[in-house]
Structure formats: structure tokens, C-alpha cells
Length: 343
Image (cartoon, rainbow, N blue to C red; front, side, top):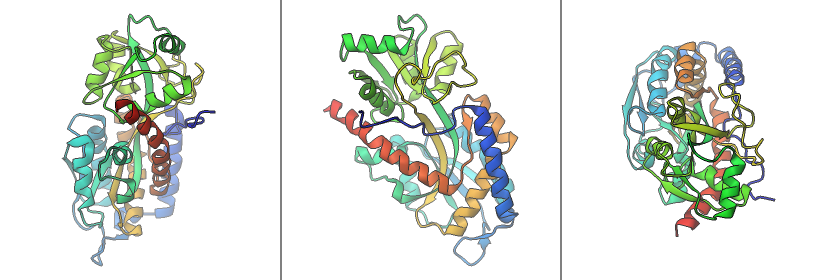
């Protein structure tokens, strides 16, 4: 039996309908419990006054224009409505997100300095960065980006089994593009190899856009990345999907089978959320978490994110904390496998 077992989806919500239903339920429950706490500043920022009483800075640890930046700038004004203060978005990109993550670690844990986060907050520790989940308090997930395997439009591969058969016949000669070794999309490729009993070769790029472009150009055998990232190339006729990495077919792609249907129980999604420095007071975390759940439930947020081929999510701090712990356990073996192949 594979040491990965049945690889769980890290969103747990494969279809938009189910996601939106869950968000609505969570939002209603959160608002009933918190009443008007988020609007009235029910928490304590550490200075004896109700939290929040001043502007909140929300750092995006990536360059402007990506999905993380989009989600931050979309949810920020909605958080302002909930919290009653300005939420100022600031980009601090660099070094796989570690520039922004390191900045956040150095801030006072009072709730006034926050950061967006992605899978790097889990994976960087396995690549000798001084970044680990214990450094932060996780406030809520707001995006899930389900993954897919896609190929150039004229590729001879018609199914996931075709890729597997070729890789078994030609070990190491079938290539895939990724946003980097140990990245959120390189890691499921390691799981794919383990589950299918094949050997692939990773061709890393500096980000998802050039990674997907390489597959569209035929420079690699296939792309493994977010559905939304690949969609422009697919819609333009340069690529086509082979399989989605979800536990059920996506409503938007009803004719694309899941990897599980093709015999490989592989599920993976990118994720984006908000976090604060570790040690932030519980009441402040709750105020921020309640505001995030409420903001993510609003049509103004859901519509923008859905139109960008991503899934809007709105989870509580406690649920997001448990989710991150599960991701830490899941990613470790994948990254170790990837690193062993680079040596």
C-alpha cells in the first residue's frame, strides 16, 4: 500500500455549488454566534481598547496580479465593512513568499498586521527556510484552486493512463512543468509517481504562468497546475485537460474525469487564506475570523473569485488551523521525494 494512502483533497469541496452552500451555512452560523461583534470591535487589541481601533495592514507575499493578490484586494473592502476600519493591502513579494512571511513574524501579535498565505507557509520549512506554521495564527481560508493535469492540444496523450503507460515504457523521459521544486504543484506530481509506480522528470519554472506556457508550447509532456491557471490556454485551444485532481468531477468541466476515475486516487488544490503572527489574542483572532467568514460569504466576493476560475471558500480560524496541520503532514513526504531526485 502506498505510504500516501488515499490522498485527500485539501479543499474538501470539489464543486462550486457545495462550496457556496457550505460558505452560506458557515456565515450564518458565525454571524448568529458573534452577533455584531465584528462591526462593534468585540476583541481586545492588547491596549485595553476594543479591537480594532485603527487601520489594518494586509500584506500579499506575492507580486501583483496573481490569484492571491486578487483575493486580497477583493476581500479587503468587505473586511472594512465588517470591522469598521481601513484594510490596506500591500505587496511584499520575493523568495517564494518568504519575504512577506518573515516580515509578518517580526510584527506585534495584535491583529493590526496580517498576511495572505499559500502552501509555501507549509512547504518552505522542508527547503531550509526559517518558516513554519507554528510561527502564525491562521484566521481563515478564502480560496481553493482545484488542480488538473493538462497537455498540449495535439498531444498523443488522450487519458491519464496514456501518460502512465508512456512513463512505464520510458522511465524518466516523460516530463512535467511545475512552478518550482517542492511547490504546491510539484508535490502532487511526486504523489502521482508514487501511486502510479512511474518515474517522471520535473522541469521547474519561476511561477505557474511560465510553467503552464511551457506545456502549451510542447516543451514538456504535461502540466500539473490549477484549473484556473490552465484555463486560458485551454479556452484558447492551445491545451486540453486530461484529468482533474478532485474527488468528484467539476461542474464547470463535466466531461473531464477525475484522476481517481482513471485509477490514481490523487487530489490536490492550491489554497489561499489570511494569517496573523503567532500569539495574537484569542478574542482578536475570533473577531478577524468572524469578519473573514462573513466577507467571503458575500456575493461581491464570491462572484469575482468564481469568475476567475477559482473556488471561493470561507472557513473559521479553527477549521483552517486543522487544515494547515493536515497539509503539513501531507506535503512532507512529497517534498522529501522531490529533493531526493534533485541530489
